[in-house]
Amino acid sequence: MLALIAIYILYTLFENLVADPGSTSFLSHKTEPRDSFHLPVWLKVMYVHVVAACLAMLSGAVNFFGRAKRRRFHRFNGYIYAVCVFVVTLSSGYMAPDSTGGRIVSIAFNTVNMYWPLAVFISILQARRKQFDKHRNWMIRSYLFCFTNLFIHMITFVFNGGLGLTYETSYTVGVYGSIVLNVLIAECIIRIICRKAQAIRSHQSNAKGF
Image (cartoon, rainbow, N blue to C red):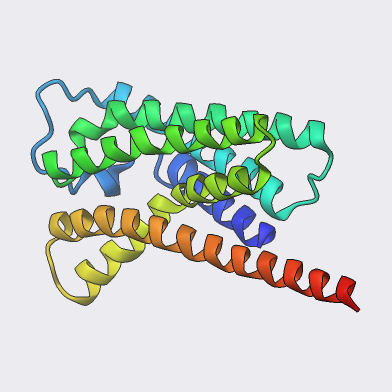
């Protein structure tokens, strides 16, 4: 899993910083940019957004799937993740008013920009209280939002390329669909982990009884 995430990160960095640094393909779908839209500034913020998102995805993956078992490194890496999420949501907040799809998409992005750092804060709070199961669960809820852009483009491709809807409509569906997927997948993972933990505890309890 860590290798797949690393490949996706490299692809994202190459696509946004090397292959299309002017983001011409994406910007071609923006039909009504604001009067205050300033491309050079928007691009710089976008670069920061992309790099911070990739770092958040990498640091989160290392703590989840890597061998970051040492407490000090896990904590340090976790704080890197938290800072990156803050940068991602801050930069997203700047770009949200110019979102493809208009105000309705901007509202969705700003909702994520409030929820995501809140989830990170709650997870850190639970870790400090040594409620590590709750810490893990909130980190799962948080980490799934690293895949928001991936889900958006997947859904947009299906509705635009497969069903023939306009790009703007497909992108709007993609944004809201990605949020729903993030939440549902996170809760499914948490339920699976909880069931496994309960099965292990039940097995250990039964073993002690013999």
